[in-house]
Length: 393
Image (cartoon, rainbow, N blue to C red; front, side, top):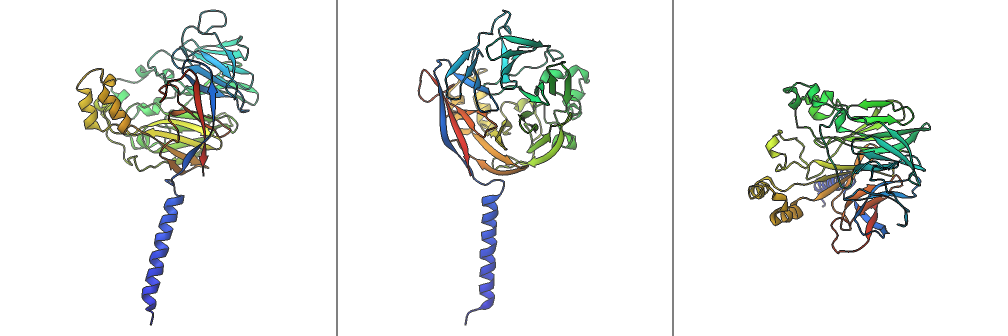
């Protein structure tokens, strides 16, 4: 005779295991992949990066990685225009540029090196110069693949949106309070800047419900990452420390919180370690490094770190430790990028590796992700390649 109780227990165990496996397969850490869809080749010798693409999916704004010279490139990779603006001439912006962004379909903006925002038509004629918005020069960061602003049209108005660390003067706080949690209450470095009348609005860089600010815990001054969806007028704000992503409706004059997303990955600690300035370069904490909208989804990147004991040993060998072969080998072995995918206010999965060699460069509102294999290619070449990926669901 069949033992009914044992059969029932077996069914319950099987059902429980099946439910757990289904939950893991469809949960926030569901394993997803990117697949290669296409590539864009540009016949320019100098390594290029993508700063922006027209919302229509048309031309790209690219720039040389070293000189930061801008180019208008068709979506097929053809050079439409090489802009000669890195000079002191009437159409110039001086000899330094932070980055470039389209302003509608027929204009683009250049962020000068602390000399304002320069607006051009597609031919390359300067139409307008907007005054600088920084209060002084308190900090300066330049990245290969990221710019600090985005241009768009809102109710017919030309608007720049971005983050400017020099909108906050650290001396506005007492020396003691600069390294305390109240620092987060004061920093309003996210901005909108209207081209018509140069109206500037500033917003909190650290949300009130961000863990360290809410818990009054000091974790350093990591500038947050931001992204803007120009069709939906939606903003994503990602503090580099912690596991919280904030998504706002920005269709009105003020951003309104839509979603607070808890992010997770097996290589991300739940607790934020105590801050120690000495460990800024040798600590193990995997800070977030990039955020992009691609279509209706959001792509978040973080990188693992070289273990602290290994890093400290390398740094002890030389002040220029970053030139040592040991550093390069350790970085190759341990410092790897991982990606979290967010959709409709929830994390829907993770991507643990790219299908091609290169680094995350750009993502479009059409849903494409572009990987740059130009700065450190596996094979030397005299042209640029951008691999176009899509998410495989």
